[in-house]
Length: 226
Image (cartoon, rainbow, N blue to C red; front, side, top):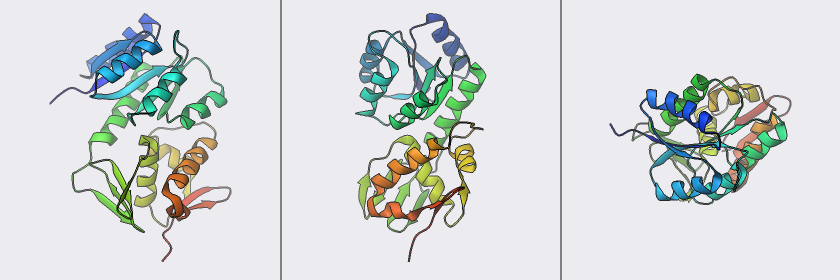
């Protein structure tokens, strides 16, 4: 089986080596970049990168700029690393389409576990696994969403969130449950993380966005009106 390729972007060589060593032990193919500009060049020269681990504070081009550039062309999963713990930075990351957000210092084993969880969800679906509800169709294998037969461009996390909603139609879902299920780990951040993603998802779904009902003080429920 071909090894999945991961781009690790950090201006600290010791940090890159630490992450690389843990990832290669899990049989991932690791490419490194020491600054944002180099990361962009490498990303567009390698069309088969499965995931990007991206530091925020870097010379030449910071992580936010790199994320914007990548998101202009790709929905590849992005894990953002930062020395800051400011929730405003975290929310900015999610607004830009970051899939995971990890503050330094962190456990390399936890980072690898999150990498594996994301890649397992992106590549582990059966080819005939299709969900349908209210003229919304999700093809998990192809990672595609169609509304009334027309493709809708969703980020990785928006796709996962919609899939989770459709798999749990009619069930009231708390923000905590959504975070633990969709982000696949115990998340203790601000509930606005969920609200930000739901707002963007509703916008992309157009009128079908009304299927995502807000349950005030709790969370959300996906319900198709007959």
